[in-house]
Image 1 (cartoon, helix red, strand yellow):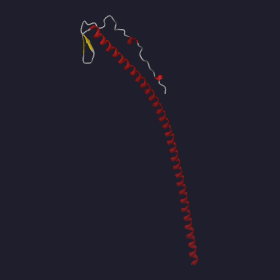
Image 2 (cartoon, rainbow, N blue to C red):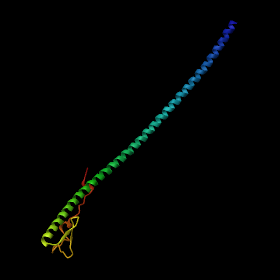
Image 3 (cartoon, one colour):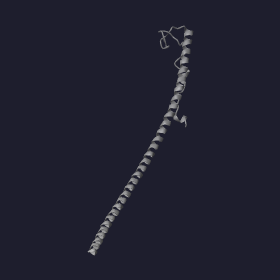
Image 4 (cartoon, one colour):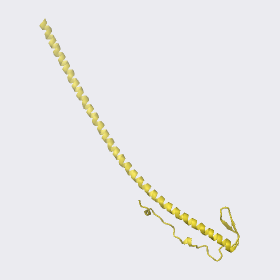
Length: 159
């Protein structure tokens, strides 16, 4: 019986070994499959990141293009602003000169003709009907009306 019991133990051990080997093979196969899935996930993640890099590079190029266009528009507006400021300064000087001329003419008219002139609240004068403040001189074509207008362009200011 002892030999019988040792024989059955051997069979049992050999059955356990086969079961153990089967489990080991299944575990190895499962581990391989898990590793393969992990590599696939890593590859998919890498592909997604590469796609994001491409997309971000494209967006960056578009933003740089927009920034360059905006900078060019800013330079154009600044140039136009300089032109308008120069024109405003020139027109202010002309207006001041014209006001000086009008004041000079008004003072000379009052002194030479002793005409009755009524100044209103805005320091503009009003003549009474029948008054001739100009005498024989023509006031319709003074020297300042023959001046050419100021013409400026963006080409005047270069950066």
